[in-house]
Length: 251
Image (spheres, rainbow, N blue to C red):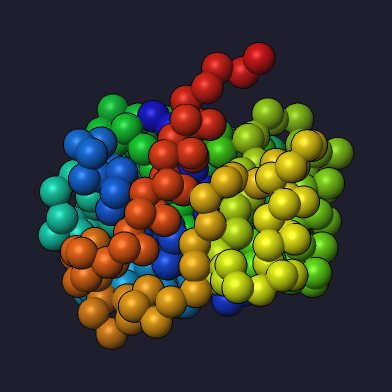
């Protein structure tokens, strides 16, 4: 099983939008996929129109790793399940304050899911916290959406440097540009710098388009409510690059 976290310490960068669409595309290819909504705001849960009748509390998630099937919901799409969020999981960070115990607990959750899923995709809250530090150390790949602005790129550099310096786990950091507009020179320059020599950025960008922003209205992935949209190709391109990177052998 491959674990893929979508993360940025800044909000409003298209993280959840991309995570939901990538999870859908992953499942559409026939992969058994679990989308774990770790953000107490529950945006991924909302986008997939999940209405869970289970009271999902942070302590229950961490301690019931052998019985997580009771908390997992079907998305209604083939091969795609969801571990939904609730406002109660805002306490998850406090329960992971002990780093070693936190890593052990998350690893146990991953191990318990390995027989049921090919991919677990995590939509992470926008913050630097005990939760994010634990995830930096346990996930296989960290996908980071970045708006092509100076402040957003600085935030990415800070997180990337922190992970490189402090993590003992070889997580693959996969930044990519979101809310991209090729008409803007500052965006084109950011792309050239990010994908040029020494750059880590994926070569596919997610554009800023109103049809993508309508996910909150339709409460479904873009390929479902707008199946002929040309912008599906952007998510497909990002997914293809992520999939190749995640499946590459280290070294």
